Length: 163
Ligand SMILES: [Fe+2]
Image 1 (cartoon, rainbow, N blue to C red):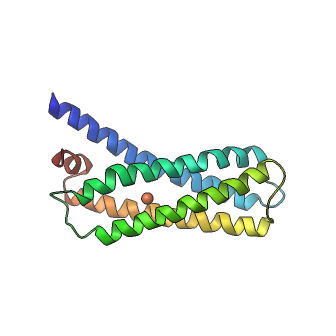
Image 2: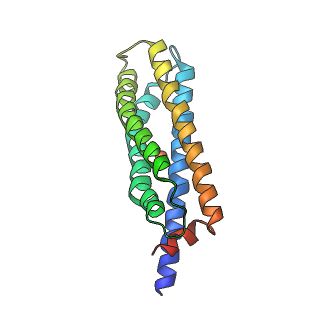
């Protein structure tokens, strides 16, 4: 019974691991479409919706990674302990993304309300800076964790070994 619940928990966590990555990449796609639509074809409803979901998606990803995934690797008995600097770097990138996401949310809301707080060129630059960096971050995490999990028998094996 305990094994079954542990297995289910690891499957849920693997699902979450995939979900937060997909959500962030979808968000990048929407931000790119907004950047491409500047200055004259901006969909105001999309800006309003994106300004609302942007901090939620970023926060959900950071919480899962920092509360579940990183501690799992840091405390792992099976995974090599040479990840300290990498995890520190990823956490620093999270902090930068969180601040950037808040600013971007305000800018997008201003477009949604039809009162842009800055010009199209600055907004396009800001959008591209955010989604390009986020795509790099997500790609790096995907590669890193895929390699760790495959070397250690899969996501479930790493997770179950620590519980
Ligand atoms: Fe991350």
